[in-house]
Amino acid sequence: MAFVFDLPSIPATRIAGSDARFAVHRIYCIGRNYAEHAREMGAQAVSRDHPVFFMKPADAIVPEGGEIPYPSATRELHHEVEMVVALSGGGRDIAPARALDCVFGYGVGLDLTRRDLQAAMKAKGLPWDVAKGFDGSAPVSVLRAATEIGHPQHARLSLEVNGEVRQDADIADMIFAVPELIAELSKLFELKAGDLIFTGTPAGVGPLERGDTFRASLQGIAELAGRVT
Image (tube, rainbow, N blue to C red; front, side, top):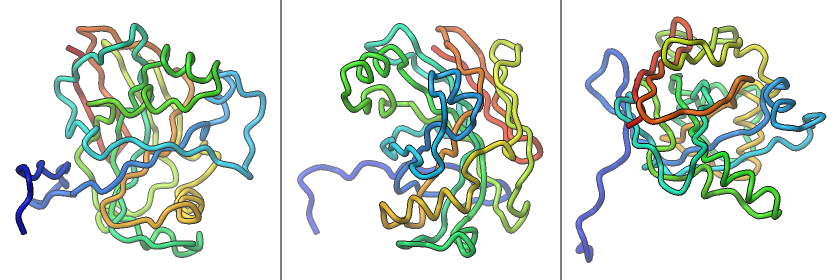
């Protein structure tokens, strides 16, 4: 089959202990999945009836961090550290009891956000894709397979900026656990192998400036380091 231009490279990240790569299909993200973060963003209460999802393009990933370009059109780039779930299977209307069967592995990532643009869009009642889906907005670590580490229910999730701890929580504090996230997403989309789920950020989000260094950690599972250029 002929195409009118060369096909772009497939977004992918490494797998620990393997020469294979994890090809990314879609990136799903959840907002307000830690109560303290929801409060710091102005939400008085978080409903378990209506989880908040949004998406980033697959090619927004920055595998293994490294140098992250400061995005255009913002003066307020914010960090949001998150556990990342990688799927090797999927489907529709997946029951929570079998949701973990779809999980390939886990990593850590940053949901980078143009906060000033997000605030402006929210104030006007408009979608805020421009605040979340820009180039390089999803740095993600090497993945660890669930066959190696199991399915973590407790792990310290933290972020240091210039050596100072900015965010620090346990994934057990998530309002929606991983099986629930997968089940809820599968009501809205047909999940597929290659999907990444950014599972929400704890409190402590804040600015990143040019020249800042960062180190994200999902304790015992994955690390991600880089610098804003």
